[in-house]
Image 1 (tube, rainbow, N blue to C red):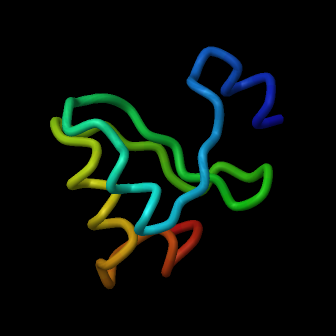
Image 2: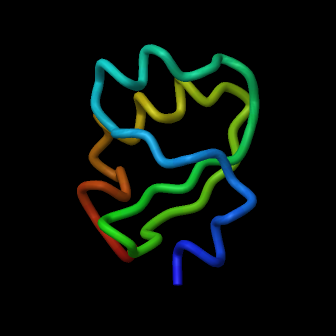
Length: 67
């Protein structure tokens, strides 16, 4: 399902601290996947900062899938 739903987005990239540093500081939409399952869709004015929050925050969808 994720393939057809997300076909208009950029290709998936790994979600590690090293990869987040290369994310643009510009605004945009981000989708967090767990395998083929979408666990979070968000919009941010600064993608790099927001992705870093996802990696580190206690309310991160990575720490609380489905919430």
